[in-house]
Length: 431
Image (tube, rainbow, N blue to C red; front, side):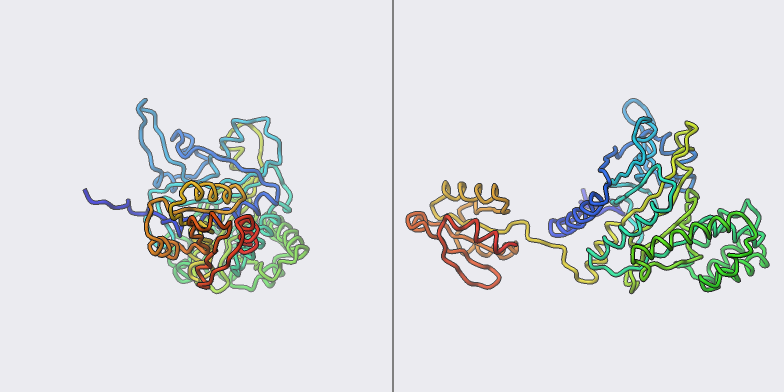
């Protein structure tokens, strides 16, 4: 048997996973500071829920992992965290709105594997259910700014409005039955460029005159485009889209994040679920091409999915754990912290060492001890390789005198202190 991982999955060794856990803790701290509550949903689901008409759509169903359980029921692995959220709201009709939740968990897609796209990956989702106001979008964009500043990553938040984009498509004259297909092509502009999108639209039988007119609008500078359509809107969608964009920009300026927010009339976020604001977040230097976060408003999907006659306005954002981790690695921004702060090496003093390491842990200091009676040199070598910053060699003389030497592994120096002062000394050094 060859030991190998399934393509599109990977192991994260301790140093990698510590860094990923630290990112998750930082994200969680911000989510909760904004008043969002944690939610956890099952990874497995009835397939018919995942395959609902108003869930992910036909394209995503091609990538669902589907199987039968022992009762011959059709089961699937979740492919996102939005469908489980919709199900939770449907099963809990008395849930208080607005409902602000975050969920961090693995999702699975049996799709093509390439750089930045695995079959098993972690989503970090934040959603507000039950708020019609554009303040909801503004809050998520402000949160994104806070998170990337905290992570020391410089980003731009590109935003648009699907009503505005749909309005332009209608003004151009593109038939309604091609609108969603055109939007899917426009969503690829960052990947395949304008010529690539033009070629794809031609393959979709969009007439050349419509393509030219569409790019005439979309190649305008953002302010110029808005100005050309603002005072003489040719349809209601454009009017509503501009009104929502104006309101959002007012909140962006009020929050002081206008320097990193850019209006992008190209931006569409290909999924059909979006009904208003859409946004994507990219590193300023584009050292990583993939977005590091994205989201938007999807007012109709949950109500249609549950089919109970109630509309649930919703806005969400997802942060890509894997791409954030890779961005930090690329920029050599360390998220690592040694898992153990102090290592105790007993020399015939196992009982006392157990007592000391237990006290340290109970005082909030991560500690470990040599358990296998290796020689002191081997124990110090192990501590060095594990990047443990402090070591105490605890022998019978130390027990008798009540004094120990704490070795600073980075500096190669030793400090003699009383046993009773170990806690305060280490807390000061670790902080």
